[in-house]
Length: 288
Image (cartoon, rainbow, N blue to C red; front, side, top):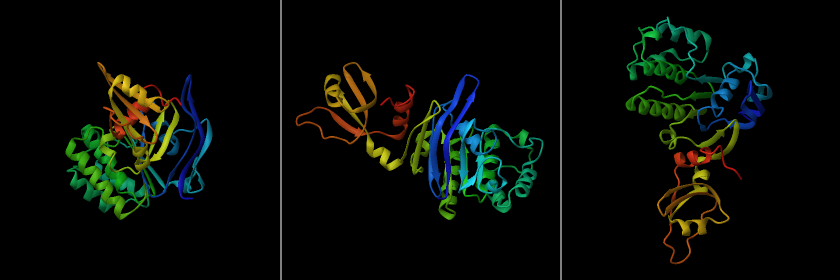
């Protein structure tokens, strides 16, 4: 199977368990939302996938190839992250040329075209760019690579609203023209909710769930009304959280939606992905 397969991966930093026996797969040809709070383990797993750090135990394979210290996967995976891995004293155009030397699949012409759309000055040194334009440079490199797996770790940090929208437009345009696996690790969930096909939620180093966005939205819903009535309706159901205001209560439920009893004053509504994520992770996960 063409996929990034992660099996029983654990990573500790002194007394902190960053990843705890994590197993999942990112299949080829999908757009994933990799969601987790700060410190949940997202960046640690991404850095292990990219061979920037090594797991204490477990293994990662890409299209059946061993992932650890294997040059055969060099042209299969690229991770764009907050970490500055480039010589900041070089000009953007020089960094483009180095990227083309390092990756056979880097499209130099495409990089210049994307840079022009973002108004990225390729004659400037990387260190003289604003935080936003440094992110744009990294995004440009990622979008100009023809590799089957691309990971974006908090891709739009420092970008204004117009540049964020342009990035998402270019990402979808590229995905439609050249299908691949795209993994977006972000806390800006509302922005990616409409483009991701599958959701992976990580919290405290453990995978809470992995589901298609459609299936997940079908499973989650809200019930609101007088607190006593809400509690009665929710009895025996998998409630992942509540919001309360005076005598009014809003419950967030995972499971098949049941019709309201005849004459009930309760209201049912859909749960959005942002709220689902918050309720799953605000107390360290869904305790079932």
